[in-house]
Amino acid sequence: MSTLNLKTLKKLCGPVKNIIKACPLPMARFGLSPTIIFPKNKQICALFDGIGSSIVAQNENQNNHMWVMGSLMASYVELISSFQDYLTQNKIKANHSEKYLNLFLTGMLFELHESKFDLKKLSRELQTKGGINEELLKRLTQDKVFINLKKNLNKIFQRIKNANNN
Image (cartoon, rainbow, N blue to C red):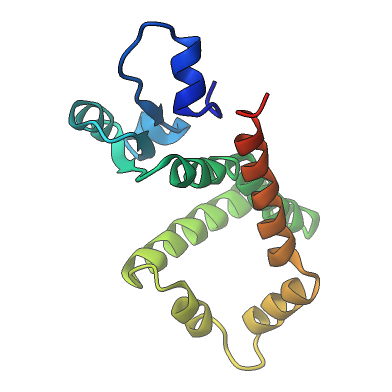
């Protein structure tokens, strides 16, 4: 149901006149869900602002692109798991790697916030010329990690878009 557009939902829901799509995420339990709302509805926004923050999509296409971001959750956790596996395989105790990664990732979120989400600038600032941050970024770029990620996000978008063509 989450990938269906309003036109399809209206057909499925019969006599219902108003349908508002909302996508709260699991972090709502901490009051941190960015909930996508479409179309805009003040009452629905107020409801979901209680579990985080409502983000109103301006149109169906924008709604679907934001939905794609929800597909990152499990991959994000797997990425962090690979960090933890690396540390564990290199004889770092689990409790130490968990503590380090927790503080590291929380700190990175604060860096993003403080930089006002200027990602290009922050990326440059976090690289020391000839340093390990610069090297890993270059290696990942050469391996086309970021290009492939974007390609796969586009494939998820196509899946959402195609869900309405059946």
